Amino acid sequence: MIAKADAVDGAGLGLAALDWQSPPVLAPTARASNALLGILGHSEQCIGLAMSGQIAVCDCRTKPMEDPAVAVALAMHYARTAIDRGIPIPEVVLELLALRVREGDLACRAVGEWLDERGLLDIRFPPSVGRDR
Image (cartoon, rainbow, N blue to C red; front, side, top):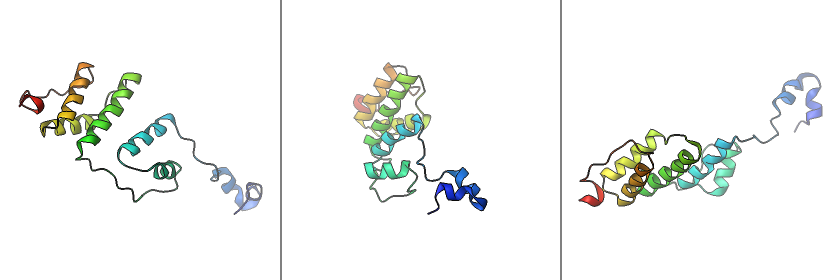
């Protein structure tokens, strides 16, 4: 390994400028994605390695997007952000939630209604879907 002091001499000048030995500084929004990675089923160790840039793929058994619990967890995660920061819930998350509601998942329906009551949902669920059947 080349020390920074050695890298400054001659041809190693570019290495010193890269400062590749320091861990990356994560922005606050990057830290928030730790929760999302956890929701999807990644381990704490995997998340730490991914966030530090040490791995790009892992062997964690992630939850499929078809799992209604994933739709609920994502919706609730983004709802907290929407309430705290006034940032809208991503449309893809709302569409995933709506898809699970159309399939009849009652937990997704309850979360959708909760989001609607707080003005965070632009999708209206038909009365024949979910608990109204």
